[in-house]
Image (tube, rainbow, N blue to C red):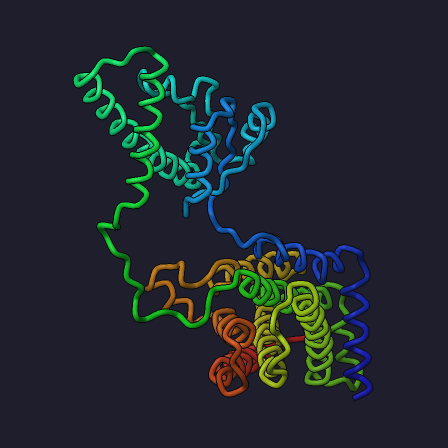
Amino acid sequence: MKKILSIAWKDTRVRFSGWSEWLFFLILPIVFTLVLAGGTGGSQDSRVRLVVVDQADTPLSAELVAALQNSEAVRPELMDLAAAENQFSQRSASAVLIIPADFDLAHLEKGNLPIELRQQPNNMNALVAQRAVLAVLSRVSSAADIAKASLSEAEQIRPFASAGERQAYFEAALQQAQSLMAAAPARVAEAQGSTQNPVPYDPRANSSAGQLITWVFIPLISISSLFAYERQKGTLRRLLTTPTQKATYLLGTIFGQVAAALVQMLLLVGFGILVMKLNWGHAPLALAVMLVASTLAAAALGTTLGTFVKTESQANGLSIMGGMVMALLGGCWYPLEMFPHIVQNIVRILPTTWAMQGLLAIVLRGQGFNAVLPDAGVLLGFAALFFMIGIWRFRFE
C-alpha cells in the first residue's frame, strides 16, 4: 500500500508541477460552465434582443415600441443611434430597428412610413427580429388602412372644414380601429399538448454536468501520457530491477489520477450548489456512485490508450481530441435531444453519454440512487472492459 501511495503522490506532483494544470483543473471548467449556462442570476427572458433607436419620440413610435415589448419573439432595448451603430458594428447586436423622426400620425395619414431595420448577415436571431417587426407593423398598417377608409367615407358624406378637423378625425378613427382589433376574438385557438414534460429544461444544470464530465474525462484519458512519459524517461524500464510489480505500478498511477479527478468533481459540484444554486446534494449516494463510476470509466480509457501510444505528445493530442469529441457527442456541450435520432442511438457506445444521462437524472430531474443504477452499471462495464485490455497489453518497454 505504501508503494501505491508513493507512486500516486509522485504522479500528482508531476501533473501539478506547472501553473497551466491549475487552469485546466478548475478555472476553465468554471468559466465554460458559466458561459454555456448563460451566466447565473441573470434574466430568464429567452426572447431575441432587438436594439431600437426611437428618433421620432411620438405617440405612434411609443405604440410601436410597446407592441414590440409585448412580442413573444423579441425583447426591445432602447438606445441612441451612436450606441446602436457601435454595437451593430461590433456584432454584439443581431438587429437594429431605427424609427425615423417623421414617424407620426400626420405622415401616416398621408402615406407609408419607412423604417430602417439593420440585420447581421446569416444570423438566425436577426431573422427572428425581422419576422417580429413585420408582424407588429402589419397590425399597425391594418389599423391605419381602416382609419383611412373611414376618413374617405366621412369626406364623401361631409367635407371637413379644415385640415385640423380632418387630422383629428383620422386620429380618432385610428384609435377606434386599434381598440376594435385588440378586442377582436381569436380566430385560432392554441391547445397545450397532453404529453407535457414535468421537468423544465435548465441550461445551468446541463452546463454544470456537461463541463464536469468534459474537464474530468480529458485529464483521466491523459493517464496515457504518464505511461508514455515514463517510458521515454526510462523509469518504467528501471522498475524491472526493483520488486515493484506491474499491478502495484498501475494501481498507484490510476489511484492518484482518480483521486485528483474526484476532488475536481467535488469542487465543481460545490460551485454548482453555492454559486449556480443547483440541486446537486439531494441524493448524495447516487451522486457518489455516478462520480466514481465516471472516473473509473475515463481512467480505464486512459489506461488502454497508454498501451498504444508511443510518445507523450501523441498521448496528449489523442487525449484532448478524444475527450472533446466524446464530450460533444455525449451531450456535454449541447443537449443530446438536439442531435438527429440516429446519432442519439449511435452515441450510446460512448461513456460520456451514460455519465451525462446519470448526472442529469440527479441534478435536473431530482432522481435518486435507483434511477442512476443502469447508467452507473454501464460505466462500470466500460471500466472493466478497458482496464482488462489495458492491463493485458501493458508493457514496461
